Image (cartoon, rainbow, N blue to C red; front, top):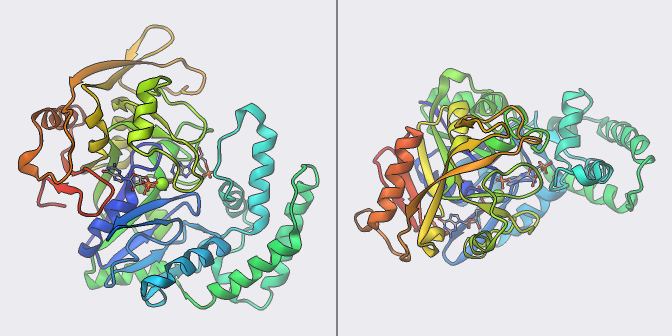
Length: 425
Ligand code: GDP
Ligand code: IMO
Ligand code: MG
């Protein structure tokens, strides 16, 4: 068997949580491979909306094992809150959740450092979720981080102190208010709580599942345009959000990767700062935000909205080796009589390109649009046979441009509002 990967092709919030939940019954294992509590993955079924930050989106399917991989940064405090929220649903989380001992721990000072660094950036702030992602990955790469397995060692308290002392040394140069006694207490309580879960050598675990023939889905967080290497640097997150990240974030060899599901919204959104060529600063943008309920699942911030951007999608498809495309939120575009698709970028010097330029921050990129007719009808209770002609044309147009089949369309937030266009998904 292979490890299939599902990941976002835009700036996050494409609808990964919903689709992982939809696909989970087909998979024995769902595994998160990067990111941390900056993610907010929404699932909706039986009239209830759930937002998961660190727990994989297979958790509501009783037969699915869920792994938090070594590439993840885990905040024990957020983890405890998340688990407690799930308590009323009678899930056997303790049986179905496996946490890598090699996952990096977010300590409370990482969150304080995130705030301090953002404040110091002034107008150039990243718009971070302030969950401690950048500082915890910095400590991992700087070879001084704490890992989940460390909580089982006798000297964890002194190692925690050593790390936080380094952070305090930096923080004294910044004016950030905090009550350390409270933060430390809730952290240490959460660490004790975490000890009650299955802390495993997840690279052995997942490779053993592969050997047994289990089906495995790797669940990406954020999106390809937020990738530390390939995103709109420096306005990115601090991990590899692309397919390659599933290999390093789980301990799976590249030859074991199977399908790569690239998920995208039928338009574009971005939360936080950074370049966004097709952003709409007008009433159309407002309408998209309102109709799509485009407010961050983690921070509640309004998302910036714009038309679909094919040069960036083509780039993400190339980097990830996408084999199937999944188009989300088609229903939101029902409000428009005409729909625009950015097919090329015009650069400062007048050059027209369909490639992502190296300089995306200081380059003035003007989108070149094709205009398609909208379908202008609601998409509730739709089956594949009833897809309106104009939506079908939109899909065919995108497939031709992107050269990858669109095998699934989502027409609403609920599990059931999903149209499969292929037997392969
Ligand atoms: P994720 O981070 O990729 O899991 O995406 P988020 O959960 O942050 O954001 C996606 C939002 O869109 C959530 O509020 C979902 O409930 C919602 N959603 C997902 N698919 C659809 C869809 O097809 N139509 C509509 N209207 N909403 C959707
Ligand atoms: P999911 O998994 C959308 C954005 C932040 C900010 C930048 C860096 O729900 O799609 P960070 O907290 O990582 O330092 O923030 O990345 N960002 C996301 N945007 N969806 C996410 O996750 C995001 N995670 C981080 O807004 O611009
Ligand atoms: Mg999200």
